[in-house]
Length: 328
Image 1 (tube, helix red, strand yellow):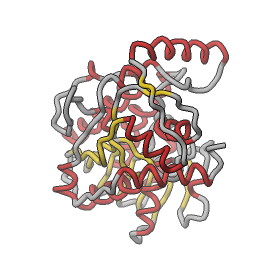
Image 2 (cartoon, helix red, strand yellow; image 1 turned 60 degrees about the vertical axis):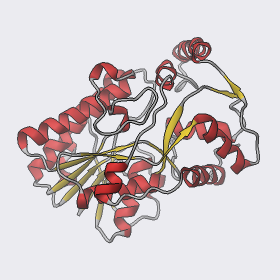
Image 3 (cartoon, rainbow, N blue to C red; image 1 turned 90 degrees about the vertical axis):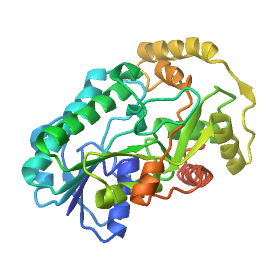
Image 4 (cartoon, rainbow, N blue to C red; image 1 turned 120 degrees about the vertical axis):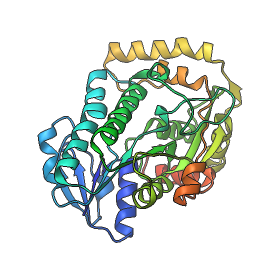
């Protein structure tokens, strides 16, 4: 039996589906309030639990030989930073300890390339130097601290864990959607008239899921593996989106210094009106100053990881969003 946390979410549901396709019996840990559309029609045992409530975690782990801890609070802006830290850091430590207590044989922990160092004009990997002071915003800070907790438990208590660091997953079933999914929706809907000079490593969400299973089977305990795809300029990503919809990609490039006041204004408006996440955030603009390019050579070499072209991920994402009414 395998337990998958965050199984109703974007990456978690992809991991869940891959495990079932591989013939594994799977248990999904979901919060009582979670949207469960991604679990419809899937033969999976559902147990309720919450990372912020450690006492709710142990029951889901009983009888499990493996744990895929995918769940995380992934937002680039939040009214409650302490709550994000509680979920991503304290919740990760809690479920790792519960897994050790339950005698789980092997764990795959889903970290993020957000925890890795950046290269100003190059490509980063697992060995690029980084420190907490390099983390921009509470999301990156929380994922960095969570990864440190996991590594500490591995070094101190021999936790049987392998860490994977997905880059920027894109693809079907992004029901929330994620910040990257929101960008794809806005671009595909023709609501992105301009862009900033940045870049992302784009990977199909199903390739990220494959990487999780490969890490479980072949990964070295205590090691980290970047699960990425293709490094793309944002302008190129938007051109591919436009090609899928028959629209026109934006041609106006806005300097970061011009966007930053808009981000401050958007955040202020959200605070005043009680609205949802701003359409552009200060942390997102700060992060965009560096191209977030990464290499997956280690996973390709050691795990047999084989990501498909990024264009396929973008095409599948646009098709799913269109078929599910996101592009109105």
